[in-house]
Image (cartoon, rainbow, N blue to C red):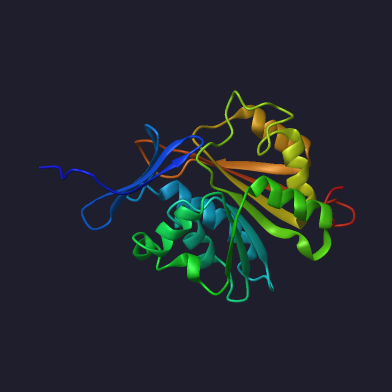
Length: 235
């Protein structure tokens, strides 16, 4: 017999009631309104997102990574397991309560990833964080930007003005990256227009749909192109 869900905590947000629910020892849900944002037993695309976004940095010296969206911490855990010991990871999370959940009832799912010595969590909008790094440049830039947000790119995304997936936002991400930097983005479904915007901004793009059968989300992996003559990234 299926166990009922127990609500651990509910908070009001501008987008509806945000809830953490649990049944059994390791079965958790995060919901907002009537929408399920995250299920602890269905995390393969989040894990692959973290692995692919940081795969080029395994042997790098002091890599810097920005993760947008904390969720239950699975993407962060996968990134940390891929990165070297001297890496620096900044997590931008809108809601401080989600951070509390990841340090509390959800901590065991990810070996308390948020309190890893390599991690700094900033409460705020990841789009603002990207713009700040783009403007400051230099050491403020990242080797990888990973976006694990519950609303990924989709067919109704405004092609230029969307703060995360529009062409202007992509240019900000490009400016916030170091040479040969990578952008990894979670999406519920493949979005051809977003793929094209990434390519138009100078990225090479591949996509992955992790798993076999069932609901399969998509991971966009975009890397800055290199000049064939100079070996430098495209400008």
